[in-house]
Length: 400
Image (cartoon, rainbow, N blue to C red; front, side, top):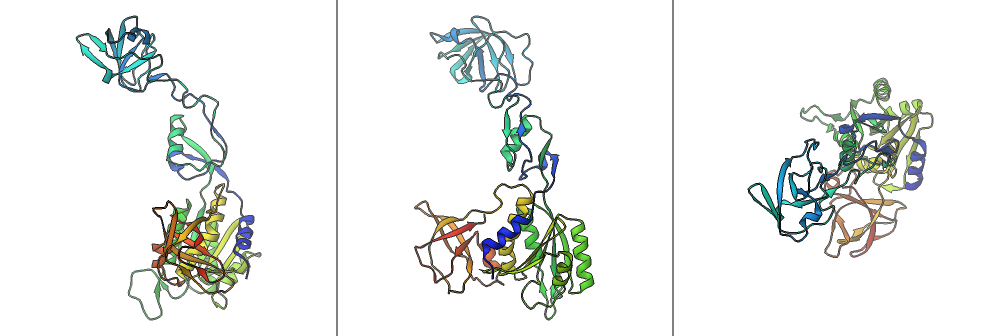
């Protein structure tokens, strides 16, 4: 067996970033910038008001309350050309409207009352009151976001405010998922003796989408070498990476090993010192990675989390493709027996009244038990030994 860190290091050393592309702004959520992004214009583009109220000369409000003559109205979106605030005058103004010439402050409407064509200002205001300067947020030539920034909703809003229509990012990984096995069905028909429904493919497609990839359903392939070869070759031709599930344990007599070993000369069939998800296959077909994950449902999900997800996110430019462990308190004990492996225990995590993260088992830990994986939002990294007692501490990978 090899260690988890050795297996992860081998895989991450094998994959590089995908080609940079320019994609529409609204499609860039979760993508990673491939170059620094700069501002070509000021934000805001002109001085404007932060409040509904009256544009005034601050000096005219000294000794408030004072009465000023209203000489115009300026809503947002109107060109202020021709409007001017003179001594003893005010212009009614709406949030976001440009500041008219002559004005150097805004009195919010709550500090005013109107009397005919006049406004009475109840409090004096300083120069710059409720004014937003041109370029207050961003100025032309300023770096807005560096390369390798993961774009969230706020980033997209900033880029929209600068007029970006397309954004230079690393491509999303287009990843095919292929289930293998004569026992699998997925057509809704009643199960016959020896058959099981294919859950892994649907789970992996969802995990890929959650990781920011474009997931491609390649269906189920039977244990026939010709069919397996055709499915894998066609899948690789249409994707950036391939994930298969099933047929990687010692002693399996399916055709996946033969085909993948033939296509990827450096394909490694690894036994990783972890539980679940000990068996793993990985190799490169040209520049495209292939991940052979175990067939047991929980093993398949854990293997994806530890090996496929970090590699795929590295391909998409993520600067930190792996989740960082955090320390948690164990509420109900996590027993185990020494076996030379790192155990990844499915746990439910939440913050306690002490402000610390607490975990407890989410259910049965058998590699065939999928529901406890669905109920878990973290994996506890329980080292070789006798487990972790109640009140003890353990490293966890928080999944959600």
